[in-house]
Length: 595
View 1 (cartoon, rainbow, N blue to C red):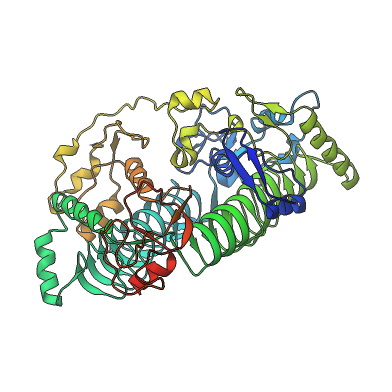
View 2 (cartoon, rainbow, N blue to C red):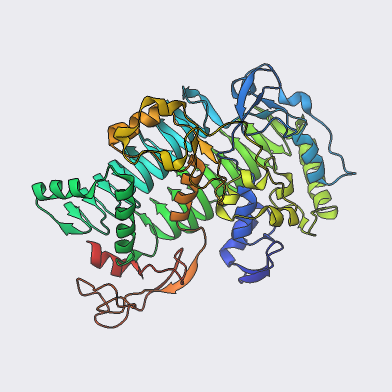
């Protein structure tokens, strides 16, 4: 089959379906998509609440719990431990398909009938870490999400196998690190990005195997460098004292100078290592995968995101998890041996042939189910014989095509579409979609998406941000009792909480690392890290290497490249937009400068 151009139902932009895509859809026995890849990702992320947590009552025990569903959400919510227990059985909520309604209308009502998990936690592996979500194997952690195998960490997203680290976005095997984006195997790494195998570095970008560096970029196996200038060990230490890394004012000046230096050094067109035949960004140990982002160990796949537990094979439009997932399409938070899953959210552990289902595990041959465990041949949680299941499934698919769900903007949802955003259990601004594609409240309303207004907080700020000491040495334990004003004061697009409190482990960390207190709430700090991460969008560009210097005449090449003095002919797709200031090189030109 030849490639085909279609117009997205949602954004009205054209997108391409390649011949190999049609082959995948045929294998999965699904129709080709009517949404473009970006809108499909946005739709999935609108069902993913990582960080918005609420205090509420468990609807089974009436005890106080923490949940991603607020008390006024309209959902029946059980504490995660009770939800996994034998105190209830989701099969008792089974019902017949109602062919007088659209499938999605019936499923929407069903979502409000079956009890939901309070949090997505592997609770037997959680120790003193209640205020977290989408996580497992945590000890003494606070407000981390998309996290596994961490200890004494807080305010982190997409962090794995790390210890004593705070304010991280995409990190693996970190220790005593702070305010990092996309760093791996680092110790005592602060305010840095895209670093690997580093020790005691600050305000640095794209360092590998380096130690004792400040404000550097593009170095390999270097030590005692400041703004890319080498120093003798003693001279370096004296210079550090002059820089005053313990002062908030000095940190601001160092950051400004470092960012200026970073823009003068070429970037590789994508973040990633140990890959074969891939495209996208933040890709590691993957092969034969296209337009993937923030993935590890993905093979023969396309449009996959946030796959951190390898491997995942033969998947399209798959967001979050991995761990031996195979043949998944339009799925969110699915893993642990999942196979042949379509249009589902939160299904895991040896699940197979599951469609349009949520919060199910250890099951097979499900359609439109919620909360089931160790079941098979079920539709709306009601069990059938294999023959009757197949008959009803085929009838439901025909029904979805003949009587589709149509949202307020006229978008048609037949069989083959992921759940409509209007069915999400969360408001748009509670979800990861707001990070990926932020909307205003007015735009969300126009599209029929719910919006969560912040409730008035009944607290009195006791410490203005201007009154926070610039040196951690001047901070007493009394600050643990203060309600501290956020510098943004709610006037930003980061879901600002306007005020925040310190936790004791956080204050201890700042003291041990000699770091000034933050002046922003954790939501604003997370929002600023998101802005430092490249977007999940791609542009076709040519290499910016002009031969001897970069095309903008800012960077002087240090070695001869394969194309000599002539401009590099290589082209690529990159998440660096053409109007951004960075100097973007192809892999060959970049490697000539950093190795």
